[in-house]
Length: 524
Image (tube, rainbow, N blue to C red; front, top):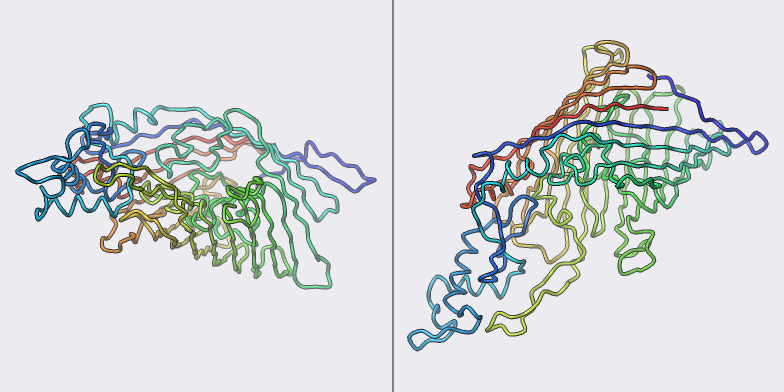
């Protein structure tokens, strides 16, 4: 392992207080490129202002739009038969309005308007500069050079506690590596503070009992700016152990639905059995609560333990040590919380866990006049994860293995037709330690980030599949500098929305992304 730099240590012996300054600066040049059928579709979505038709059976996505183009076309045809251009009712052969289409196939599609929840509809236009891979590359395909800087003040008053205050700055805003455009291209280090320095951690960690008379420890964590993944009895993966992290999803053991990096007002407790030697396997149990909106005093949008807190209750049961481990994790997420990373289809609208839904309310139904009103959804998520890892006793050409599987069930009301209410993911990570030289590591991971497995109406099977591949090599240049070149490939990151790249909603559309970065990490 790299030697730890002790520069910046300040001690006030009369108070037994020690503050250690620890910093990390990461320089990240890199880029992404998308590929697709015909280098992307010739079509893109544009608002149909002429007919003012709304979405039927679907929603917008970052790179496409609704799923059911045929249904919308028939609804527009039905609307045109019933109404004039100004919205008034048409007269034809002595019939008025709906009487014109009564008994025809269009009657059903017009009646659907009365029972569906709508959004503004977008129509196909032809444009060689938009859609699919071409549109993505125009906006996110340029090479970039970004940074992430962290400066932590680790203060201990007793030698067993920790007051962590961390400053952070980064310039990954509106960048492919911040997850803009596609959720899965986000890096672990890609912070967006618009070049402003901000406090991103502030919490106190202290033991209740930690003496030789008992065989366990109880550790409490509390603070206004904490993160649930930093208050665990055991991290359930060794894929990135001692090396740099690349993609955000692989850095979260492939189970980002449970270990979702929820950050905010936090309180937690960790129970852990003591062992004779450090690194021996031990049992641990964790419970923590993070309110992402905990700093807001208005209970209608935030607060602690309110229905608008953005609350995350995470619990973990784990058994493991240096060589092997297994963990079962569960997270209950209130509305407004997410699964962090997944396909564009599953990630849309906060992973279908938004607190409010827009519901159409008619003022004059015969003229199709009305407005959208907010309706409480009472949504929440139940997230489960099972992780395990194994590492060889001696480093070399036999890799360590980390694996994880996860599932999320979404409950509530007001879901769009054919929107995801269940997602799953799985992950396998291999890591070779000390391959070329001491502390030079290679990692390779693959799996399927969160993808939809069940839709709201439960009549169709979602085509939301996507595979992720990542490879990296970590080279320590000095005790203070590590260089990590890496590459990743996403086979179908838009998931089911990939079909939107064809005007006919065909299954033959293709959209994948290849990316690479070289991280230079300085620790001081």
